[in-house]
Length: 336
Figure 1 (cartoon, rainbow, N blue to C red):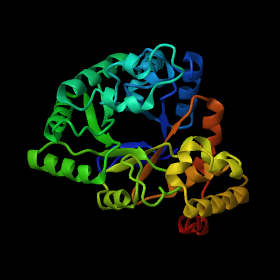
Figure 2: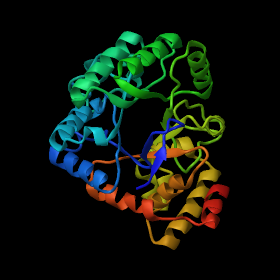
Figure 3: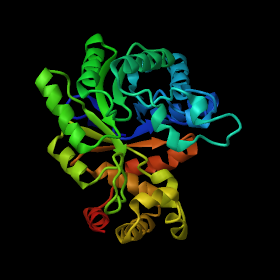
């Protein structure tokens, strides 16, 4: 696996990150350790988690299962300094019972926004300190504001993040689930006050393009891609790059998937048709081609985050690292 520069920091990170959300819930310790060991053996060293992973898979909890599992793995392997570790704060639940009452089959998703801890200075400090305890480390390499918080002045949030850098608790920070105009405000305030600039933007991003007219602050659109292209000091780290397995479904089932709604349209039908042709030509699954497409992108730079709980799934997708798409294939994929 190759390494790529994070923004313009000079720091190199793995070109594919491992999303650790399922660890400690969908994956027990044996399965978690096996996956982490396999990722490292394949040359990976960029692991992404969050303080609230994964409250929605274990009723009555605030999350923290993923960070706790990673902390156990670091302790067992003695390799914390070999991993570029990212975690997030601001989207923890303040009242799990209010989101997921006893006896209810799953959380009430529309109540979650009202339960976020937010990006106030005190909340972020508590969240970060909790993450450090669970991870068993004195710092994280990259810390994200998980969900942009309009209720708190940006100056308060950014000053807190700057203090975390000064204290050595984080090396860099980034933002997730944030609109482009807010990024411009963030950067202007950092320049004005002499605070460190964000170096990463974590958003939902995939090969398919969002449908026309969609208002969604968490999915990358043309404007955000343009902004990133003009600001190479921000690296896009893409969550859900494979749209939760959508690409490998039979063609007739793809458009019925819930997450396809954000990408629906004739443009996506055309993209999927070309994707299937390229995948068939190489004898690989369409998801492998999608990842190879990601790795071929240079402007703006994009790092896909692969979230899985299974070694076999990671191994199958890792084939993309060695799959080189031709210029003609990349042109066809983009032109669709």
